Image (cartoon, rainbow, N blue to C red; front, side):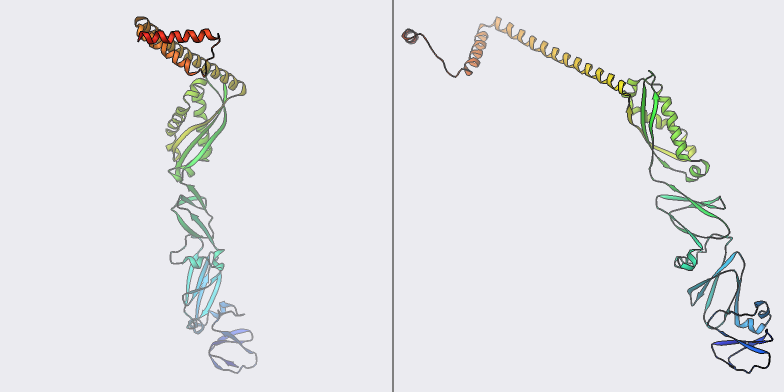
Length: 366
């Protein structure tokens, strides 16, 4: 039997390994068999490796990697990723190709910096990796075995899916908003109303907010609800409507005293809507109409008084000055004459004679 240059042979007798055969021609005797192995491929033999490893000559020709249950290895040929090696013994022939191995302990979820992301995205590796993306407006909290490990800044993170559980909680650092809607509250004067309140805030301490506080959104909502009820209950309906803008300032200032312990910063708060029952709304409309009518009457009386005072002053001036009286009389005559388009005279020839006599007498006076 001929063993080629790219082959090696295992001489076996009665099924047991005897020695390694290098390239050349060989004859097998009774009970002997030769097992051929291409050296370009990983070693795969029917013979238990426990027997093979006892041959020092064979061991010099092989590169052996023994992986435990909690280990895997990345195989690189000529600096290029080849495959993932799982638990067990793997043997490769030396001198044919340049082989590199990266052994990974799956008890440690952190990935070595030397492993490129392109390798982690390979189909054979991808299923072994958990990836998390932290956006520019976020911070991440890394948990290993349900215990907080560290804070993650914006970026992409990869971890081995090994013997330990991995999870990441993301905190949104942008401006957030919560609304207290449809809160039914009694005012100080026992008038029922519904209130919609909006509050804007930011997370300033993700660790405190997400680790030390359970469901911070619900707790913030309850804080707002209680402060609103306390403050609105101390005001009458008229005060609520007048101080609508001040309610937001009071509530936010009150909440700020307790928010630092929650890792939150309150930015703004304000009343969005005040909703009154139908009958109360009708009463308020009637009051508003009455107020506007009263204001209109006051304005009308004020104008009438001013007009009467002006007429009185004019009458006094005309009484004291006859020339002014005549001028005022001519002014009114002029206004009347502007509205006359024609004059019709009745009475016959006598009126014409009278006009002629009137005109002659006026000429003589001149």
